[in-house]
Image (cartoon, rainbow, N blue to C red; front, side, top):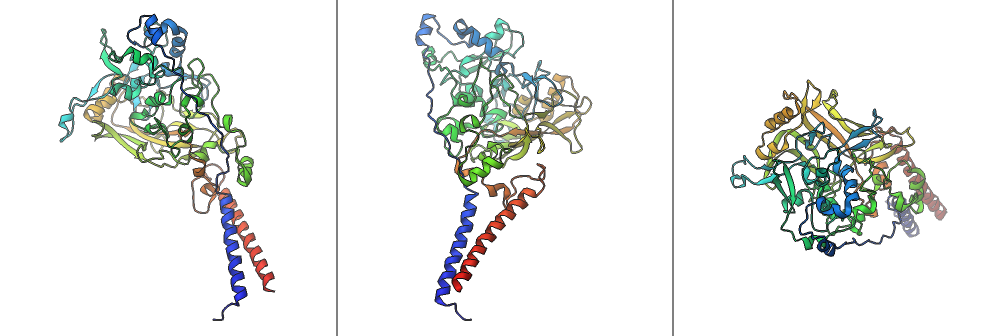
Length: 539
């Protein structure tokens, strides 16, 4: 075979290199982050030392809001009326309802069943569960304390169920320092580390008592004006029964020093309340699957980053053509972005498994890390199963628990990321409602059937062995990744990656075909130019 002349050999090689570099440049131009970010100065938490105040008022022990009311009566009333305490607030964004009082006090929870039946009969709110029937090999764990109920987090209370009528007893039922201390904690940490002691009062009611052995001077020096992220995460990082189980990208890795690969905002010194501003102890949200529809401004990414945060060629494309895509969609590429704290994607209450690390039985739970979100349109309204209204499962045996509403044709809709959670739960086929589960019985004995029957009896329901699958879309708002890890164009529009469900979003295959065609055209143009140059040099 004849060799190319030496002059053609090096020129052709150079042209090929230019073509390859050009193609690579095009790929990089549409795949690399273009945002500039913002400069954030961490705000130190302001400690409000109460040592002298406590001495002045002869306060020698902390007893919750009873201790605080003399000076902070108005604030205690605010908390009493808040969703954090009442566990319910008026919802006005649920399809089919002009308004409905709803929240954790009334809802059926796809993770743990119902806290109350109809907001009145306690099912799992408070109690003392100890391991009663350990499997062979774990007999030494028998009698170990394992749980005190949903009240560990729900209600920021000292154990009495929240009531709508404001009484002195209710006002003294608030545990102020679960939020306003740098050391005292609520949630599972508060109970298991002895900050809050479970006991029965003189009426035989289970209550929490702030540990009297914690020095009042120590507590006085720990009081803060606004909560730290550690105070918030003591509950929110452990919801659903375990670390990181429930809320997407909220887990114990956010406590203390935070790695930027987990959450860039908290890694740079932010606290939860920097975004979640409260007025009168009310925290507004609008996530599809949360209930805190309190008065106030809901934070938006654009509040800090502006409407057009992206720069350069790709920035122009994003700013111009992606106004229907929520910031979270590109900037939170995964849920549970670490192996230490996988997230709960499915829960099956038909069977129980013993978990030695927790010293208790639990339903069968599927935990996963690096979960790719599902993507749906969301316009600020949602479909919600309002419990305990009668509901028929679909032909696949499913009930939609929460689903965002919106469409391509709705100008108020954007594409958001969601964690899809499914749960198999007991169902009363006569009354057409899911059946509450006495979770403490499962934890203590592993006897799921007994737990369901006890829950049914407490609610006045019938259970004959039927189950349904609850489907919940959980909006992903936390865990913003470094900008280098944000999704690029090829993450959704590439020839092989299928992250975005274009047909389900109403686009068919057009976005993929269009982007691949444009990419191919650019490559063809570059190759064509290279060929013309080559022909010209050859003359």
